[in-house]
Amino acid sequence: MKIINPAKAGSLESNDIFIMVFPNDNGNEIELESIVIKQFGKRIKEVIEETLKELKVENAKVIAKDRGALDYTIKARVETAIRRAM
Amino acid sequence: MKLRRTMLFMPGNNPGMIQNASILGADSVILDLEDAVSIDEKDAARMLVRNALSTLDFSGCEVVVRINSIQSDFGYDDLNVIARVKPDAILVPKATSDDIEEIDEILSIIEREEGFKLGSIKLFPLVETAIGLENIRETILASKRNIGVLLGAEDLTADMGIKRTREGNEIFYARNRVASICKAYKIDAIDTPFADVNDVEGLIEDTKRAKAIGMTGKAAINPRQIDYIHDVFSPSMEEIIYAKRVLKAKEEALKEGKGVFSLDGKMVDAPIIQRAENILLKAKLAGIIRE
Image 1 (tube, rainbow over the protein chains, first blue to last red):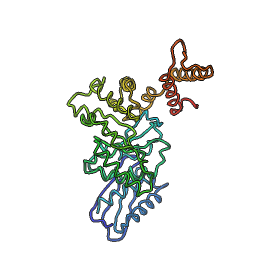
Image 2: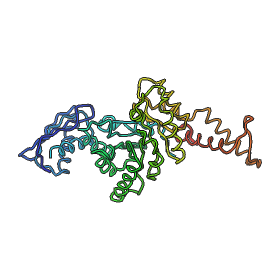
Image 3: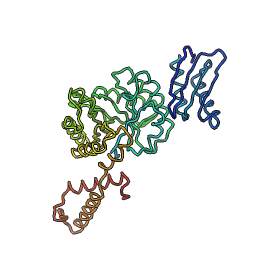
Image 4: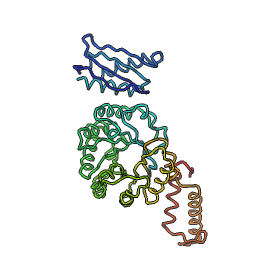
């Protein structure tokens, strides 16, 4: 999937994550801000990367603001943002 | 028999609420993709609910998803995405017999494609228009997947152009019709939610009124309503003790070769025995008694 437009999904409410995606010339890039970055930052980035891979996205800049989202929410919000960006 | 004293509505785009759905104590939860989700978030809610169903353990709590009407721009996508992660049931808004027939066919195709047991995804028509109420029999008969009907009184009274009141006299006919037809086809009749979450007394009275005419459960819109509704729909200790005495007396009468017998000076016949058995089954399902 090719990212054409900037798009966003999710929210800044507790247990959610706010995702913004932009077209990117240098492959996939992830910028993460999280209330649990010390404990789960690495895992959250992995989940975002996995989701991009599953969707065959190779040119996205992802800005993620996490409020304690579980994996299923992170995946859903990334997928929603990507589909909105196509 | 599945106990559905409460069916708790939860917004389909709220991860914090969805992931707590199974610990709130409702017999069923309804993850809502329709009225609780704004038009521009329909896609997000659909993906969130799909992921929740395929990932989270709802611990035996029945999970129902209210899709958007298949007459809308979102209903078919909802159905196609959600059915593939096998919810226990789909709640169909403003259901007609044509809608139910079509959804039944689509579900059969998806069940074959996904290797699910045919007919395993059940349906709940939502009766919330005058035409829906009058055609309810045809709607129920349109699919063997139907396991209950939910009465939506807010939309129904809006459709009728009448005022919704705390006492609910305006939905007396609707409740009776839903309860009677559901009983005839041996499916659940779920009462409309009570909208004022701060009015506990009103909720209890409203639930008692619904139970008294044969509704088998009630929708809830806030977890705080669950215990009050369960108290009304669960058998009381008095009822349980009497039911046990009826069945014991029945056993003794059988030993003595009596067809009809009396308890506390009142004749006990088949309907009373049936009621006693139902009370004990409900009490067992509700976890009030063990056997």
